[in-house]
Amino acid sequence: MDKVVYTEREELLIDPKPGTAAAAARDFGIDLSITVSNLRLTPEERVRQLDEFQASMKELRKAVIAAKQNARHRAGTETSR
Image (cartoon, rainbow, N blue to C red; front, top):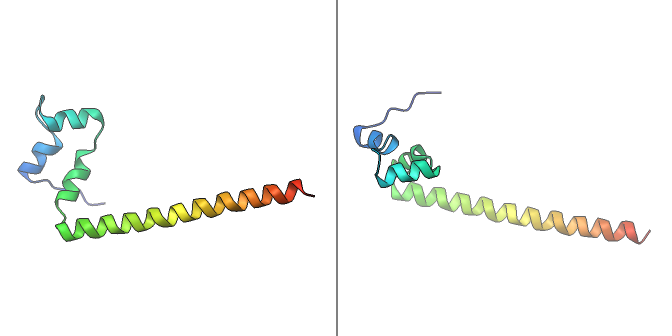
């Protein structure tokens, strides 16, 4: 995998000075490199990424609902035997 090269401004966000909001976010557990990666995207790319994520979550919800319904159906079938 290629090494990521950060600009000077990006480096300030990745390795923030103590007492800054970025330092507080990092200390809270936020991965600031992901923030930098997202900021490198155009607004259109960010919206496309969000749309793809939302579509994935919609499919996941459908799969979970179907799995729960199948489990209930199987449980009902087994108790009626």
